[in-house]
Length: 212
Image 1 (tube, rainbow, N blue to C red):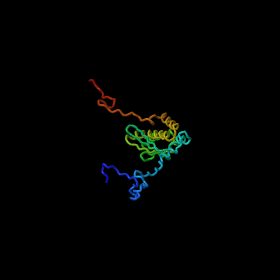
Image 2: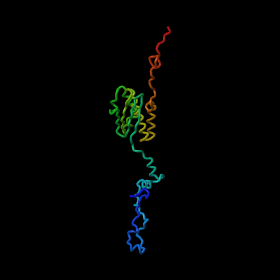
Image 3: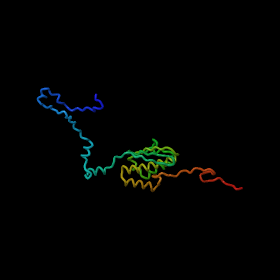
């Protein structure tokens, strides 16, 4: 065992002590010098470096084609809000399925507000939804607020999906359709109910005052 002061021990190969005594007296040198270090094993080629070396230069046609290639469609997540209701829409490539809390959007309740949730689909056209699936989770607020949060999440998810995986022109067309119909399809409504104050029946109304 090596003491801390001596330092580590290195293997220097076979030394001259392997020779016999007569050979050392005749001046025969050891086949391997004492200070010889073993030859390190050859380094394996780095796959990353090989890929970089094999890649075409930025000015070639192959690299330009790779840049212009569209990314593989993936998922998009968007939020819709109304008052305290929050809807989260997960969009991915599919076959036109839209579900809200696990149920088809066609069964959404209340029925009298069902068309409100269908507004983004009717405005953009069902054909734009045929190649994607949307799964929406909504919670908080009341029934009406949830419907408005759902419609906003659907509209924003479609715009974001077109921007990321289709092209900018199609995204701008869909966004303009929604903006012309109702701005709140894309922008959250900041209005809130004003709280009641003391001295009256509501936020602004005051109790009747009599001087006599």
